[in-house]
Image (cartoon, rainbow, N blue to C red):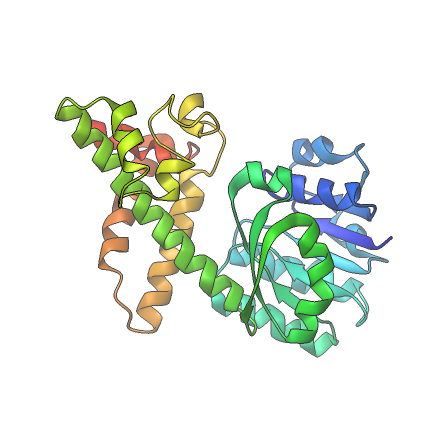
Length: 293
């Protein structure tokens, strides 16, 4: 049994922590949102009173936080001052590469092995323990992290050195954001042309336009039972988070003089949807905005 300190047990981190506890590990968690912490305590997860309390005495520390600023602050102020060099550090947040690399460097100065391991798959796969996890770090750190990653995910990839997991996740979510925008536009166009959405789904799902945004997360209700579109776009992956990830991709592209023109256009749609007051809704809800023209 490994002692795991888990910081950030929201929609994604909560199920991940629970799966680790179910696997027999001693998980001590903390979250600034009391309701999120309450949701995991009692199912094998213990509650800590602070970030620092969660990591004291831990063998492994896992973080799942909203943005780079949170990761930087939590590691600088709460994690690294309260762990030994024997502790394995795993950041599963989706953040910018610069911050990720800086935290890796600080961990190395402490003598700790560390991986960045952002995830893909959404809440359902977090619950199922079948996430895709994109890992950056040394081969030694990857080998040390693998047993815990295997509990939380089904597809574990060693993407390269520090920050490489963030780079792959960034590219993945840029594609996802673009594909959802194109999927929503296609369905709205089909509706205006008088095509039954169910027939659209049936045909495209076995044709060259098939993609995850269609087959697993369709923005039209009634076609994919587990999609947030069936729940008025509540829950799922918030537009605010998608916009954050799209902007991370645009910033990365700018830093290396890469082209991201299509991503820029998709990002503007998510920005408009956010400004409409829908930042808390699932990102597939942009179909509502597109229907309005």
